[in-house]
Length: 457
Image (tube, rainbow, N blue to C red; front, side, top):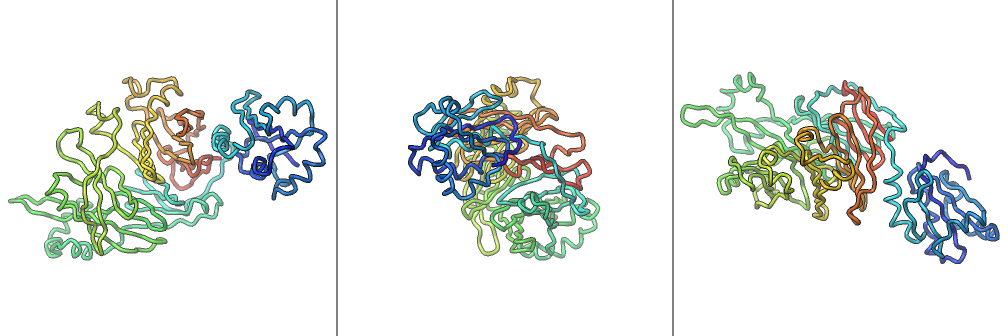
């Protein structure tokens, strides 16, 4: 078998000929290991003919590019430590893991995480003359990569697999919906709006505006605001009316008016368009806030979807780490993001997996790993930022910044232990707010002009 450069990571497997078929089944899955891991199968000399015929039964085994076979009695004695087929995972000759081959699938994610590097290979994809401002947020959900541009009021959407294959097509979506339709949905007087339209144009508030995006399956949900005048005494108040515009494959697929008044009048809470919204099991969820400083100032509201409306259902608690609840100034300014059903705060590594409601507070783990008092020192108060989070099985990947330095923390959710921490090499031409995961071993980032996407492997 041929052998490619695999960095400093190596997996030695001392093969026991007495293993049962189930115990040796992982031999057919060695190709699922990270490309940086060099695999050496160590076999006793007397079992050479047997091993060659035995592995012919594993489809694709003879085509593996990261695997070699060594027939050596001395090496077999060295690595045969468990009386069954034994695996030894090393970095630069230092052993990190030792386990029986029949536990390969349990250990695979951790080995892959340890071997990941970013930036060894860099390719780029042009954005086909699409103009973007500096106020962008690059999001990832359900196999899609989409860029939300707040200032230019649009979404740029592509498929993640197509992007990696350099065959991506980009769809540009804007809230192209009739304002008359929006007013009719909310029961608003169109004549009043027409009279004040010159004022709205002068304030650049005459068009519906995307406030947030979320992908679910093949549907892009766009949280949208429409400004309309309300009158109180002699004052004209520009008020926000909220809608959910849905798109499927880039085409409009339904619009819903959000009946926020029913929630505001009964609870005293208001929709917070600065925090993420999401859909889960058929319901919509929005962060809501109150105008007074209190520990329950920000919570979650859930909404049902009817034929044309979103109707307020109930309030639910928003899980907030002690880092915020014990620091009022931090609590009032906290922000969050959501990617692939992972809800996380940007100024503290606290992650909620909406799929199974599991919660991970990585504050202490990150401080121990970095050797810095990031959250208990004024020195780092405004210098730390969580840019992205990804979960693959039991492994959490946390991309964070201290100033303009980026790192990825890898955390095992089963053992609650840090696996490793990796520095991400950055270049001056990178537009750092766009840096994020496509997968656990691939990052994307845009250039400063925001007309090109770099893929870092």
